[in-house]
Image 1 (cartoon, rainbow, N blue to C red):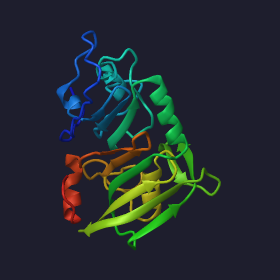
Image 2 (image 1 turned 180 degrees about the vertical axis):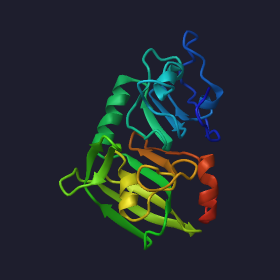
Image 3 (image 1 turned 90 degrees about the vertical axis):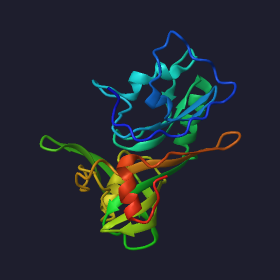
Image 4 (image 1 turned 180 degrees about the horizontal axis):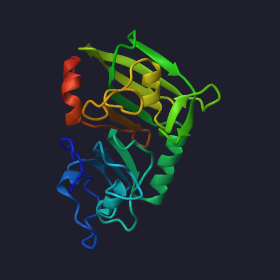
Length: 245
């Protein structure tokens, strides 16, 4: 059974992309429809919320990598991570040189990443920057989580208000660092936990309202991608004055 899947994104395949390998498992239609870009070196997916990149058991993105080979000898590999419940743009290298290049770009913080989030409350302004170092903590009762700690790893997130409505705010978020759960913790630190974030105070409102909306890769030429708004976020964004696109 496929995971919880929002409506499909756009599918654009380069003319010189490799043909499917008939020995590979069939690519499910719901996943094919989520290919935002495909060329001989690069694959960009609109990852659905609820699909982990990897796990010890259960269905994950790794389950579908053989089907996503699409004619290549090697499996495509993600160049960065998205939380299980975060939807949106995910870049995968289809060749070893491209994967190494993507890894270097992400490590050097040269990739443009834009997120959309619907949060509870009001950030109290039009835009700002959260600078709050993060550290991983754990306990037997609550398991592991990230929290703001003076001696933690430096973490910075820029935010901009896109709309308001019914006790909610719609934010554009641009992480300047890439810490685990960074945007989720920074929104909570701002006093506005992300809607549906059960770990950091956002309640259980139909799933995590966090979308990796845009990705800009400074290749030659520069490539830009945009993921559509998933179904579970559409009503909340509309309530804040946005459109479900």
